Amino acid sequence: MKKLIKIQHKYLKDVGEFLLGISLKGKESRHRMRIVNVLNEQNQNVAEEEINLLKEYAKLDEDGELIRNADGSFDILDIKEFKKQQDDLYNEQFVINDTNLDESLQTVGKLVIDYDEELNNKDAFIHDYICQQYENHKSSDRNHLEE
Image 1: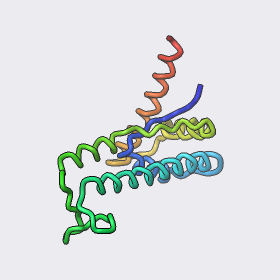
Image 2 (image 1 turned 45 degrees about the horizontal axis):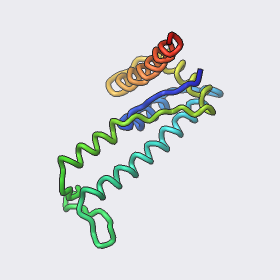
Image 3 (image 1 turned 180 degrees about the vertical axis):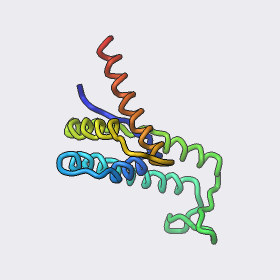
Image 4 (image 1 turned 120 degrees about the horizontal axis):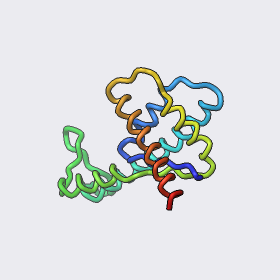
């Protein structure tokens, strides 16, 4: 069965940072880095999409670049619609389903689910989030097999 995991855009960076914080060697480290690199690449794509979104809703200079206010923020013309679009972007799911990453996804899933170190605050939340994503995929696999 093909491995996959879904991560909401708003958690891409946090998931990558959490995985980087796990002390690993050899195969486990290589597999972790393959997944982290994919997450980082997608996080960059989301950042670019957010800039494009800003350009749709904020004031631009004559060169089409965003104008910053004195406080460093952007002058957004329709803040309510911008926030709605931004929330939609952050809540979209990024699906890692590359066949070349099947073994890496399996390794990382096992590492995260079996992780037995004490966690606090954001790390505890992100660990739980990743575990839920793997569990959701497992239950979806079982349901698919039962059909």
